[in-house]
Amino acid sequence: MEIRNLFIIIFAAIVSVCALYAPQPVLPIIAKTFVIEKTKASLLMTFTLIPFFITPIFYGFLLNIIPSRIILLTCLLLLSISELLFYLSESFSALLIIRLFQGFIIPAVLTSAVTFISKKYQHALQRTLSIYISSTLLGGFLGRFLSGIMAGYYDNYKLFFLVLAFASMASFFLILYLKEERILRSEKASFFKISDLKELNVKVQFIIPFTIFFVFTAILNYIPFRIFELKANNASFLVSFIYAGYLAGMTSVLSSTNLIRRFGSEKSLILYVLTVYIIGCLLLLFSNIVVIFISIFTICACMFLTHAAASGYVNRTSNNKGLANGIYVSVYYAGAALGAQLPGFVYSRFGWDIFLIVNAIILIILLLLTSIMRFD
Image (cartoon, rainbow, N blue to C red; front, side, top):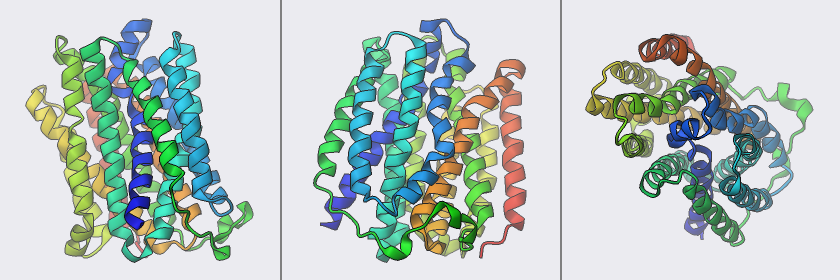
């Protein structure tokens, strides 16, 4: 029964993350189709990520009152409808509105999923969270990979969004069979008690997820444009395969429990991984496609291993898991929203090399801050 519930939750998360990242590999095609700049095309990512600033916190409170199953059913149905509308829309403005709407739906699914897991699988929390995070990585990979492949093969960048409409509806029907978790009275909270949640480590909760996802989204959002610059002929297929680095992220996350044990603590592991993350970022200074592949694999592995360690720490040390996960997801995607847009101006004005150096400096600052952080 627990395996069935976990499978249903994981499938919903995979579909939602697929929907979140599906436009990313086809941004250069969209920019060409609508004759717009790369930063404007990137708004399709930014608009979806903007609601992640605050909605996960709201959903965190809501999940202390309403069962995850109800929220999941509602949001997956709406996600299916929105993907169908995306497929049918012919104007860039309409696509932006739909993506903004999805930005209110997807965080509800993800916050509900991780909260369900943290309540239901206390006996094996770190390992189950690692499986969940790995599933979101699979969703991120499949969303980008299939979107790019289908756009290149069928010469239609919208086709995958129709597939997502059907996948979201399938997930909706699966949630009907989900056995709901029990809501405990002791977990209920109000907006006026945020300041009383002293078990939340604000430094870990905010600085680490924000920064790692800011840099990660910046690189993954603009790497398609870089590939199109280097290999214009078969760029769509190369972009799709470059996201295979997510598979390295999946492997690293699944090994996070053992690695934390080996390094002695979450902090020690994060410090080591951030160092490798910086190296992976700087490797992208090379124009060789093979080196770029290696770099993306390295960045994905480091990004999601850090995420798994920080997320596991937050869930392990927090009593109010709905709120804790809401804050974590909110900050995490706030970094993504800004990372999808702001570094693009650096890229457009100063070029790829300066863009990478700026992101590497941001990671170095995070490394220094983490070294003096106290993990209570």
